[in-house]
Length: 492
Image (cartoon, rainbow, N blue to C red; front, side, top):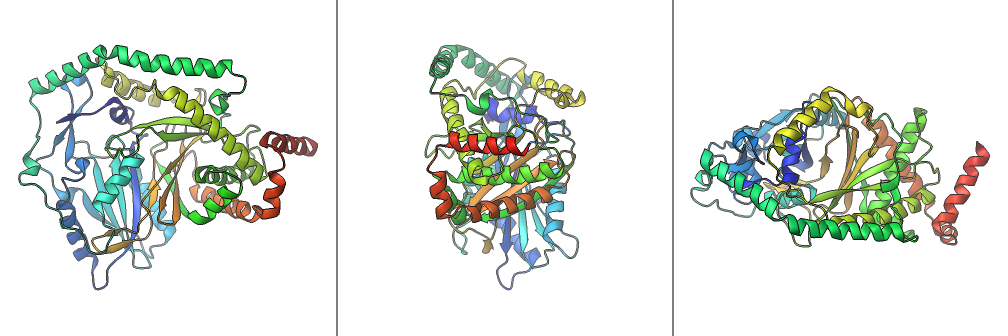
């Protein structure tokens, strides 16, 4: 048995009827020749059964601490049945991409069964081109985006020929449910260890406080979007259970070339594409705020080489500069905001505590989450961020599953109370696969926002020419923004 840390367990405590904390990735696959779908699914199940020992969440289920005194435990599910986790879902005819997106929105709105391991793979069939897809679903309590990529690599192969693995004898019978006494002792031990470690935590908190104080005292340093209060939009509300979903892709080489031309990173360019799409979408609804929208961006705290499952992330805030029409100027503003956000996040990282353990914390957090949902508190609370934008580095090699070639790697993520739109991007080989996962009331037409993003990408790609880049580099970003503000003022 293994006890969950606070960072993982919080995804259980904050889950409600409307806010479901599972994530997913979608692999579109081309079947090997002379393979029918029932045979392929049967062989895929058999293949997964040989890799159960490589991916812990496949066979672990939850066991609550006595009286929910502390965080729950992962224990082996000795009644594990692969047929409960791998099932077929057929698209209606003719099996278009829009029907596929609608099916993902439907599947993602269903809660997971907490009495068994928190994962499922829905094999989606019925595509008009003869391909199939995996809706590869896992609860966020099991992993974060980075560790999710590790799990994908263990589950799949880099060759059409599947590697041979062998599950240790008696594996499913090991580490079964703990007795009441053992679970109570482990919970009590964890609570005591947390209190005894107060000195080390204080050192980390003090280090963060010193760094922040130095930032306040230094005129050359800023807090960027951390010091800004976002303007409420239609995305910032209490969410419903229904979801909308839309997916797309861009050439990674094109994104890199745009970034290199203006000394920006891939993530800066992608956020600018999102910002351009949001600007178009909100302008069409006559709802574009005068100030730039603020994005919450998950940041990994993992050390290089750390491939453990579980969550090791915090959140930084980036101003998307959506008030600027010129995509080149907007990109430079986003780059500067992101650089400040990274510096502030580094200052506070030493005080980040992923192992909080306090008596009764699970019940307190669950009760708070349910009360806030029932009262629709997020309709009136101050807005923390307008939406979430996440970037997860994915596999660089072409992958195969049971001999089927993986064609795509779309993400599916979590809209949250107060931030009903989540846009996540994952790389795969030489493409960036992104998806908009939203509350259907906050964003009923996710496909329109996706199309707006596509237009923003084309506009940016076409504007980043050698002559335009040279002109932009003659002035610092602040001067460029001032000139843009002057243009806006004259038009008004």
